[in-house]
Image (cartoon, rainbow, N blue to C red; front, top):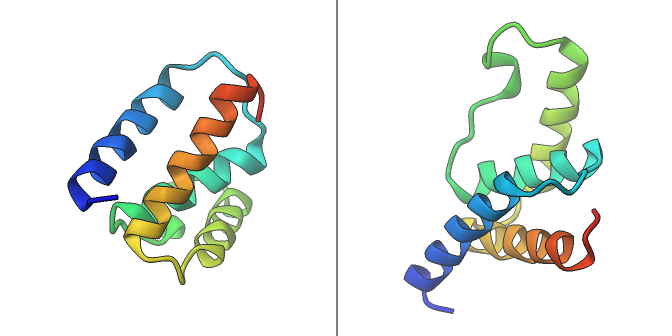
Amino acid sequence: MKKRDLHIKFGEAFEAIGETDIPIPQDVLLQLYALYKQASFDHTYPTQLGKEHHLVSAFKANALFQVKNLSPEEAKEAYIELVTKILKDGKA
């Protein structure tokens, strides 16, 4: 898939998952979070995000660690696949 098409589909997936009423478990939300961050070149460490609980920061850091070897394009593809699966199945 061309970079432009991938970027468009990634944006559409982001909007679609944000508008869904499907309940998404915390572990899947962490996957989406990490894939989004990796895909969008946002490598801000979770502990720098403010006053959130340290445990939440640790889970976010772990999720980011798990996708660190993906290129931004691979992260976008994985994000799109995960969102598509959630929306297709009606559950995460």
